[in-house]
Length: 197
DNA sequence: GTGAGGATCGTCT
DNA sequence: GACGATCCTCACA
Picture 1 (cartoon, rainbow, N blue to C red):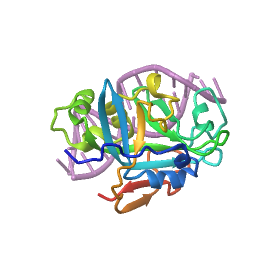
Picture 2 (picture 1 turned 120 degrees about the horizontal axis):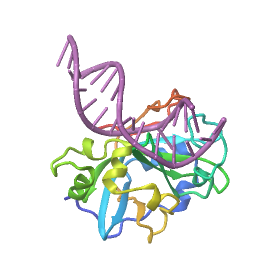
Picture 3 (picture 1 turned 30 degrees about the horizontal axis):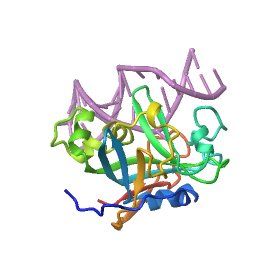
């Protein structure tokens, strides 16, 4: 197991108060933690995408505020979980002040704690590779046990929240920037950030 | 190793 | 009524 300080600082709403492009880049290397039934499930963020809102045709917020995407228009640091293709969840964290839409999609993690539980939730053997456990947006939600019903709209900047992001001080290393993938619109924008590894 | 296609449902038009 | 910020399986080289 990897060593860690007992109290890694939790990212505050100030962190998410900035542009999604900046937040996305800074989130790389941070640790997302889900407390589930008293167990810590965590992973280092290895891949993210920024979604800008009204200026970004690929964003859920592009066509304006609806009941489904209201989180993106709300205050920063709120988890936005949505259901896609009838079978997968994806998790975002809202950025920018209340009233301005924007967010960062968490696309991939490197598992740190609770790997056995993650494998069980994914229906995989304990020795499954991290790529199979949390190597995609839908996979990491399943591995962490995140669902829309339980996690959409919760504040990830509160220490009492079951879901939050910690900075354990490990430098992110080399960052690669590429166009976003899996989109039908505005996919040419270089808004995807990943750890080179 | 690589590429194509199917599964499945909440949300918007 | 149609689509989508995905993942998995199968076929073929």
